[in-house]
Amino acid sequence: MTGSHLLPNASGSAGSSEPADPARQHILLVDDDETIREHLGGVLSRSGLEVRMASNGAEALDKLDESEPDLVILDVMMPVMDGRETLRRIRERHEWLPVILLTQVGESFERASALDEGADDYLNKPFDPHELLARIRAVLRRSSRGSAPLSTSSTLTSGELRIDRTARRVFVRGNEDQLTPRAFALLEYLMAHPGEVFTRERLLQTVWGFDAIVTTRAVDHRIAEIRRVIGSDDDSPAYIETVPSLGYRFAHKVERS
Image (cartoon, rainbow, N blue to C red; front, side):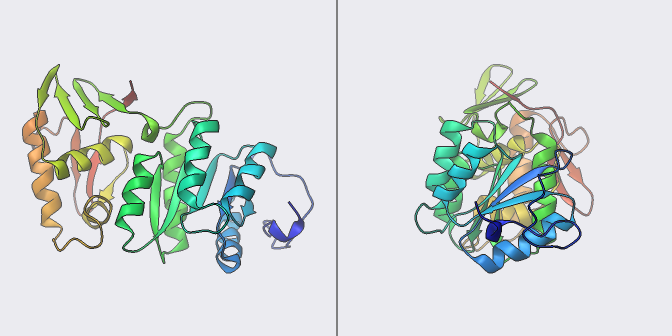
């Protein structure tokens, strides 16, 4: 689009007409709030990312037709076309493209639906821009251009462990085992983000939601349940590792199937 939607370049000059640097990873930032776009865009640009902007989902899809970025940051609540509809259309046209959703605190339904529809991660507003930068880097590390992200797969497999996300079923060595719904959701989230460390607070927000009246001990209890079912424990964490003073991570390679 026009220069009003361009970010300042690394030297701080706004509206540059210089071509994008192919050596930098490209981000499409989609938010209807101009202040948020300009502030986040500046932070991401100064961190070495090439950033384009769009003010709604329809404009974002037009920009994707012009050139594909390495990642899309997508607000949920927008006029013209909201983030969830935009995400569905992105998945239809660009299956591999990583997407991070920006949501509002308390929108547990929106958050759960967005993750089910293929978002790679989400962040609640308001947030620290550097937290968003960390999420961007984590998603880019586990994404590969031309291959669909794990978040879009209906089945995830790691060694002798397989989960069917659509049917909410878990199999170990070919045999079906049972997990409570919350434990399944926790395992599903960790498997979709292998190698990443998540704090208990982060897992609580993601899996339980902000409206849940529980403590972080609930995360520990569900991790213990998962380990009992899939055959690992603190002494030999075959799949889920405890990271001291931080939280948990899924430690093995995960594949789409």
